[in-house]
Amino acid sequence: MLVIGAQDAVNLLRFFDGLPHPRSNVNRLHRLGDVIVMAICAVLANADDPTAMAQWAKLNAAWLRRHLALPGGIPGNDTFRPGLGLLPPATFQQCVNQWLQTLQTPLDEDSEDKEHIAIDGKALCRSHDRQHGWGPVHIVSAWASGFGITLGQVATEEKSNEITAIPQLLERIDVQDAIVTLDAAGGQKTIAAQIVQGKGDYVLALKGNQEKIFQDAALLMLGHFQGDGAGGPVSRYVEVEQGHGRLEARTYYQMTAPSYLHGGAEWKGLRTIGAAVRVCEEKGIEKRDVRYYLSSLRRNGPQFAQAVRRHWGIENSLHWSLDMTCREDESRVRNRTFAENLSWLRRLTLGLIKQHPGKQSNIMKRRMAGWSPDFLTQLLTGKGT
Image (cartoon, rainbow, N blue to C red; front, side, top):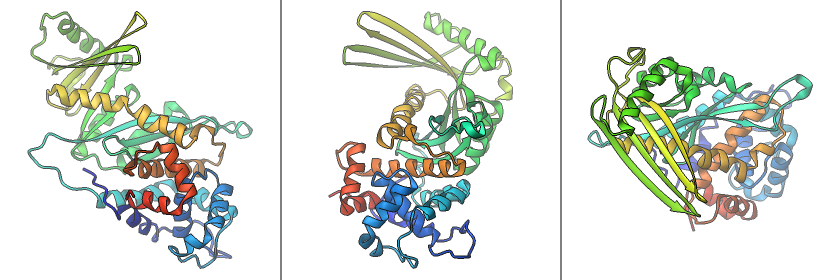
């Protein structure tokens, strides 16, 4: 469980001091930790590229000198670009993960509450480079949805490579006592085993890529949809929402996985199968959607429903926010390492923005950080006015 206190974001900055500098010692004027701290502050303040970062640092030089050593003065964009373009992304993320570990508190052993980690991919749409024949970078992120924090990410060249990126991402984060949710691309036996070995639980979307067990799950759940109770007891949980001229009902079913499921024994820790049925009525038109899941969780309708719902929320809570708040899809950075590190900066700073208790929108908070160093300090320290 993560608990962010008033000084925790400030403590984060200290973890960058030990980072190995990726540049040669020759003519090196600036400390890497200072450059990263300035980059974090600049991205919080609406600067989205090396030139904007350097300009922001120049305009806020007096404020920066009160907080940083700056032995080489204020760096220019020719320092921000190679500094973030050569820094290994895994090393950069490790520093942040060390900070996150200091915020963890043990859960009550008798509590059923678990941290939720949603893993999903997003393309940086304008990061393609036709000159080199490169498509857009795909970022696979681990999102602690209950706290609004990105725990880690891995970049891939193609969406199809997410299957190989997810195991790398799981190696970078701590899944102990957490529920990890993935869409159908991540519904792989090896990934399920890796989560269980990390002492976590999984809820994996199931589609035609796992044809036989998908068909078994669909047939079993069909009986419960029709009310004949085939296959044994089932947990059922219903949610209804109405607003903006739309009525949406979501019904979640969860049952103990029977031993005769095709390949069921190959899924480490498999305990239950589930289904989520969404029925939406808008302007007299009804739409119905059914999704199936494999899970290592015991039968618990509300817990299963929450895990599925939180995974759906990653699109709005993370991906949509990155595009609306940070204009991520408009970024034209083509250097692959720099694009991945800048993407990580966006996710880190978006988490800091979401932790701030103010009622302003994320976009407004980012603007205010650019207007006021005092408000920027609030975002860095987790304090409100």
